[in-house]
Image: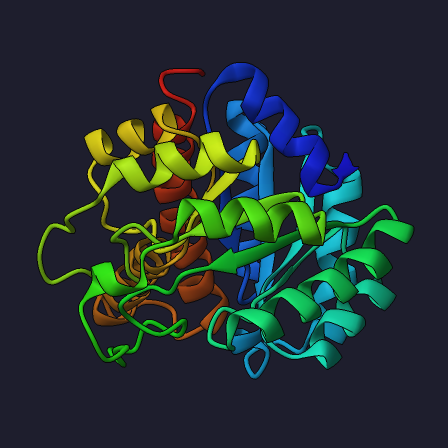
Amino acid sequence: MLVNLKEILKIAQEEKNAVGMFNATGFDSLQAVVSAAEELNRPVILAHAEVHNKYNDIDMVGPAMLAVAKNASVPVCVHLDHGTSLEMVYRALRIGFTSVMIDASAQPYGRNLALTKSVTEIAHAMNVSVEAELGRLATGEAGSGESVAGKAEDFYTDPDEAARFSAQTGIDALAVAFGTAHGFYTAQPKLDFSVVEKCAAATGLPLVMHGGSGVSEEGFHRAIANGIRKINYYSYMSKAGYLAAKNEIEKMGSGYLHDVEYAAMLAMKEDVKTAIRTFSQGKK
């Protein structure tokens, strides 16, 4: 069942939990995410990140994502993750994505505000939801180790600024910075949950956690209790698939790529199921 982000986050708001967003970088991860959600009978957000476009172009993978979502037995939102260029945002809208993230968080505040407001006006006219971001994570979006100069807390989202930004742009969800990072963690992250609580109270919006991989179960639950309603999760799902593929190759198997891809898909599916259970706080 294809839905937009606003509809799926309404479910999370009512249940006081969070919906997982998982990036689909290929057809193996696409199958893993949706089959995991269907098996647990939970809603899910299926995403294509602009940074992953070189692996599967949105014009090819996007229609497949939409087809799978429409045929799914659970609510599925098809979302553009970290759309940093207007070109990519407009491509997602033309294809039929039901949600887009315009990420101008690296831009000056005024530029971020103007771009986000413009995208929101266009997207809402098409019944498409919009996510934006204020503040920045300590590592870059690709999760390849690149870092933003300065202390992580220097880039935390300011609640008063978030309130003004949300009111002026009309966005449906806001990604906030409170200590998470993209990619793999080398140490347990130190999260400032008061930032989440204050931003939720100031904006009245469902909040988004980026850099969800590697956060402890307790950390997820505290974030959700303070207002996180969407959790972006990819790196450790991808790692589960990578390790399964590596194991399949090292076993000197059939020599067929499809056997490797299938092993990766099954491993990713189990990892996604674990994440969905955690975000649902005990819901089956």
